[in-house]
Image (tube, rainbow, N blue to C red; front, side, top):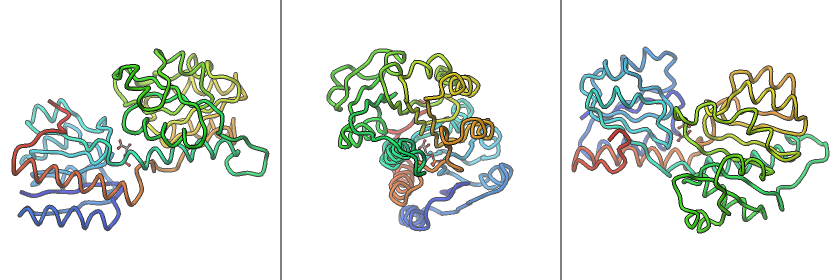
Length: 306
Ligand code: 3PG
């Protein structure tokens, strides 16, 4: 079987070498396509691939149509909103993610972002400390729980919202459960967003929610830009000069935000939450192992298009 690693934002060389070793050791063929400038390059490269390892690369209906031999796509990471699941299912392609494998990297970035904003983006003006502040964690999954543990060690108080967990499960993770988003935003000096981009969550964080935050609060988004209503965010920052926003996913209106609000907003130039040597290795190798296992045993444990 031919396993293609197609990553516009490449893994580290060590991770690619590790993936290659796993693929070749299992008797499969290995190919890599990195930093490709056009989506058409991906469409061309998948023509003879049996398996595909991707990151935020877009596996559209067109890609799936072109990939005549494709049997499995593994998104080396958590979010799979970049894969057309319905088209994959229609083409009988199994789609998996590698949950948890890059979570620590994202959690560390979320913590760094809170401190960066508390210290006025590392400029000399008097800043604040995170110790003693209350952190609201929106979704207490792999990343949210790690953010919570690290924040607790920094002396922060935790509240968390997760509709898929019981209050007991949230308490076991060290946070006080809250039961709706309004309660979360109204009571948090920082909100760290860890929800996926789904029809129900897209643009779900807007003016009403953001302006519920207490004085001087900061919204931290290491999830997806789509979950923010950018127009609402703009109005919220206008009406509430005490609020701040930092994100690992550049908003479409970032230039205007930055021009209007200066150091109250910040976006990384390219999504970097999972861009560590460790996360590359963990997620990349997990993806390769899942593919090898799927071909050997049919294991679909991490399938997301069931
Ligand atoms: C994820 O969903 O796993 C993260 O957003 C990381 O995405 P990336 O692999 O494109 O860095």
